[in-house]
Length: 166
Ligand code: ADP
Image (cartoon, rainbow, N blue to C red):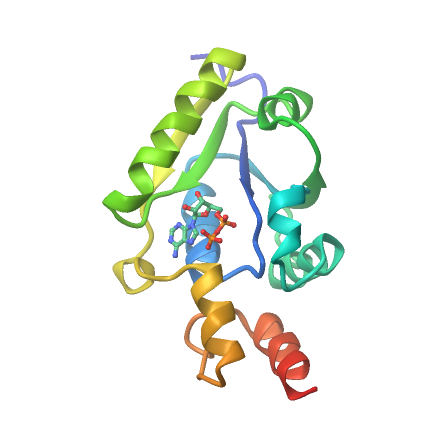
Protein backbone atom coordinates (compact mmCIF):
# COMPACT_ATOMS: atom_id res chain seq x y z
CA UNK A 1 0.00 0.00 0.00
CA UNK A 2 1.34 3.43 -0.88
CA UNK A 3 1.64 5.94 1.94
CA UNK A 4 1.70 9.09 -0.17
CA UNK A 5 -1.37 10.50 1.58
CA UNK A 6 -1.96 10.69 5.34
CA UNK A 7 -4.34 8.03 6.61
CA UNK A 8 -7.52 9.72 7.80
CA UNK A 9 -10.14 8.04 9.99
CA UNK A 10 -13.57 9.41 10.72
CA UNK A 11 -15.27 8.62 14.03
CA UNK A 12 -18.97 9.50 13.86
CA UNK A 13 -21.49 9.56 16.67
CA UNK A 14 -23.80 11.69 18.70
CA UNK A 15 -21.32 12.28 21.56
CA UNK A 16 -24.08 13.59 23.85
CA UNK A 17 -21.79 13.98 25.75
CA UNK A 18 -18.37 12.50 25.02
CA UNK A 19 -17.57 9.82 27.61
CA UNK A 20 -14.29 8.24 28.65
CA UNK A 21 -15.31 5.29 26.45
CA UNK A 22 -15.38 7.52 23.36
CA UNK A 23 -12.10 9.15 24.43
CA UNK A 24 -10.49 5.71 24.79
CA UNK A 25 -11.63 4.75 21.27
CA UNK A 26 -10.25 8.01 19.82
CA UNK A 27 -6.86 7.45 21.45
CA UNK A 28 -6.73 3.89 20.13
CA UNK A 29 -7.63 5.04 16.63
CA UNK A 30 -4.63 7.40 16.66
CA UNK A 31 -2.50 4.25 16.57
CA UNK A 32 -4.03 3.35 13.20
CA UNK A 33 -4.51 6.70 11.52
CA UNK A 34 -2.45 9.85 11.01
CA UNK A 35 -5.53 12.01 11.54
CA UNK A 36 -8.86 11.36 13.21
CA UNK A 37 -11.94 13.41 12.38
CA UNK A 38 -14.51 13.18 15.19
CA UNK A 39 -17.87 13.95 13.61
CA UNK A 40 -20.99 14.88 15.58
CA UNK A 41 -24.11 13.90 13.65
CA UNK A 42 -26.97 16.34 13.26
CA UNK A 43 -29.82 13.85 13.42
CA UNK A 44 -33.39 14.97 14.04
CA UNK A 45 -34.33 11.80 15.93
CA UNK A 46 -31.31 12.06 18.23
CA UNK A 47 -31.75 15.77 18.88
CA UNK A 48 -35.21 15.27 20.34
CA UNK A 49 -34.05 13.56 23.49
CA UNK A 50 -30.65 15.21 23.58
CA UNK A 51 -29.00 16.87 26.55
CA UNK A 52 -26.46 19.12 24.80
CA UNK A 53 -26.86 20.90 21.46
CA UNK A 54 -24.57 19.84 18.65
CA UNK A 55 -22.61 23.09 19.15
CA UNK A 56 -22.14 22.36 22.87
CA UNK A 57 -21.03 18.77 22.15
CA UNK A 58 -18.53 20.07 19.64
CA UNK A 59 -17.18 22.65 22.09
CA UNK A 60 -16.71 19.88 24.68
CA UNK A 61 -14.94 17.61 22.19
CA UNK A 62 -12.64 20.48 21.24
CA UNK A 63 -11.82 21.15 24.87
CA UNK A 64 -11.12 17.48 25.63
CA UNK A 65 -8.77 17.14 22.64
CA UNK A 66 -7.25 20.61 22.64
CA UNK A 67 -3.59 20.57 21.67
CA UNK A 68 -4.00 17.25 19.82
CA UNK A 69 -2.90 18.26 16.35
CA UNK A 70 -3.95 14.97 14.77
CA UNK A 71 -7.56 15.31 15.91
CA UNK A 72 -10.21 17.44 14.23
CA UNK A 73 -13.74 17.88 15.59
CA UNK A 74 -16.67 18.85 13.40
CA UNK A 75 -20.36 18.23 12.87
CA UNK A 76 -22.08 16.81 9.81
CA UNK A 77 -25.47 16.43 8.21
CA UNK A 78 -26.54 13.74 5.83
CA UNK A 79 -24.83 10.52 4.95
CA UNK A 80 -21.71 9.36 6.71
CA UNK A 81 -20.26 8.10 3.42
CA UNK A 82 -20.54 11.61 1.97
CA UNK A 83 -18.56 12.96 4.90
CA UNK A 84 -16.01 10.16 4.51
CA UNK A 85 -15.58 11.09 0.86
CA UNK A 86 -15.28 14.78 1.69
CA UNK A 87 -12.51 14.30 4.28
CA UNK A 88 -10.87 11.55 2.18
CA UNK A 89 -11.16 9.04 5.00
CA UNK A 90 -9.57 5.63 4.57
CA UNK A 91 -11.79 4.20 7.29
CA UNK A 92 -14.70 4.78 9.64
CA UNK A 93 -14.13 3.99 13.31
CA UNK A 94 -16.90 2.50 15.42
CA UNK A 95 -16.68 1.26 18.98
CA UNK A 96 -17.96 -2.16 20.00
CA UNK A 97 -18.82 -2.58 23.63
CA UNK A 98 -20.70 -5.85 23.75
CA UNK A 99 -22.46 -8.33 21.51
CA UNK A 100 -25.53 -6.12 21.81
CA UNK A 101 -23.81 -3.45 19.69
CA UNK A 102 -22.94 -5.93 16.99
CA UNK A 103 -26.14 -6.33 15.03
CA UNK A 104 -26.78 -2.64 14.53
CA UNK A 105 -23.13 -1.89 13.78
CA UNK A 106 -22.91 -4.78 11.32
CA UNK A 107 -25.99 -3.55 9.42
CA UNK A 108 -24.66 0.01 9.29
CA UNK A 109 -21.26 -1.12 8.05
CA UNK A 110 -22.83 -3.23 5.30
CA UNK A 111 -25.18 -0.43 4.26
CA UNK A 112 -22.36 2.10 4.16
CA UNK A 113 -20.38 -0.28 1.97
CA UNK A 114 -23.34 -0.55 -0.40
CA UNK A 115 -23.56 3.23 -0.54
CA UNK A 116 -19.83 3.74 -1.13
CA UNK A 117 -17.24 1.00 -1.18
CA UNK A 118 -14.36 3.46 -0.92
CA UNK A 119 -14.19 3.37 2.87
CA UNK A 120 -13.81 0.50 5.35
CA UNK A 121 -15.40 0.27 8.78
CA UNK A 122 -13.00 -0.61 11.58
CA UNK A 123 -14.30 -1.68 14.98
CA UNK A 124 -12.34 -0.97 18.13
CA UNK A 125 -13.04 -2.24 21.61
CA UNK A 126 -12.46 0.03 24.60
CA UNK A 127 -10.60 -0.76 27.78
CA UNK A 128 -12.85 -3.17 29.60
CA UNK A 129 -13.52 -0.66 32.37
CA UNK A 130 -15.52 1.32 29.77
CA UNK A 131 -17.29 -1.59 28.12
CA UNK A 132 -20.56 -0.91 29.96
CA UNK A 133 -20.51 2.83 29.39
CA UNK A 134 -22.91 4.72 27.13
CA UNK A 135 -23.72 8.40 26.85
CA UNK A 136 -27.39 7.69 27.53
CA UNK A 137 -26.58 5.86 30.76
CA UNK A 138 -24.31 8.69 31.86
CA UNK A 139 -27.13 11.20 31.21
CA UNK A 140 -29.52 9.05 33.22
CA UNK A 141 -27.16 8.63 36.19
CA UNK A 142 -26.39 12.37 36.21
CA UNK A 143 -30.09 13.24 36.07
CA UNK A 144 -30.70 11.05 39.10
CA UNK A 145 -27.86 12.68 41.02
CA UNK A 146 -25.27 9.90 40.72
CA UNK A 147 -21.49 10.39 40.58
CA UNK A 148 -20.33 10.36 36.95
CA UNK A 149 -16.77 11.59 37.55
CA UNK A 150 -15.24 8.22 36.59
CA UNK A 151 -17.14 8.08 33.30
CA UNK A 152 -16.64 11.44 31.63
CA UNK A 153 -13.72 13.78 30.90
CA UNK A 154 -13.32 16.79 33.19
CA UNK A 155 -14.93 19.45 30.92
CA UNK A 156 -18.05 17.27 30.57
CA UNK A 157 -18.24 16.77 34.34
CA UNK A 158 -18.06 20.54 34.84
CA UNK A 159 -20.85 21.23 32.32
CA UNK A 160 -23.09 18.46 33.59
CA UNK A 161 -22.69 19.55 37.20
CA UNK A 162 -23.64 23.08 36.16
CA UNK A 163 -26.64 21.79 34.22
CA UNK A 164 -28.05 19.61 36.97
CA UNK A 165 -27.40 22.17 39.68
CA UNK A 166 -29.96 24.45 38.02
P1 ADP B 1 -23.48 6.29 22.80
O1 ADP B 1 -23.83 4.91 22.32
O2 ADP B 1 -22.66 6.29 24.03
O3 ADP B 1 -24.64 7.24 22.83
P2 ADP B 1 -22.63 7.39 20.24
O4 ADP B 1 -23.96 7.18 19.63
O5 ADP B 1 -22.09 8.77 20.24
O6 ADP B 1 -22.51 6.88 21.74
O7 ADP B 1 -21.62 6.37 19.58
C1 ADP B 1 -20.53 6.65 18.78
C2 ADP B 1 -19.69 5.40 18.67
O8 ADP B 1 -18.96 5.22 19.88
C3 ADP B 1 -20.45 4.11 18.45
O9 ADP B 1 -19.70 3.29 17.57
C4 ADP B 1 -20.52 3.50 19.81
O10 ADP B 1 -20.62 2.09 19.77
C5 ADP B 1 -19.18 3.91 20.36
N1 ADP B 1 -19.14 3.91 21.81
C6 ADP B 1 -19.93 4.58 22.67
N2 ADP B 1 -19.58 4.35 23.95
C7 ADP B 1 -18.53 3.51 23.90
C8 ADP B 1 -17.72 2.87 24.89
N3 ADP B 1 -17.95 3.01 26.18
N4 ADP B 1 -16.74 2.06 24.44
C9 ADP B 1 -16.53 1.88 23.13
N5 ADP B 1 -17.24 2.44 22.16
C10 ADP B 1 -18.23 3.24 22.53
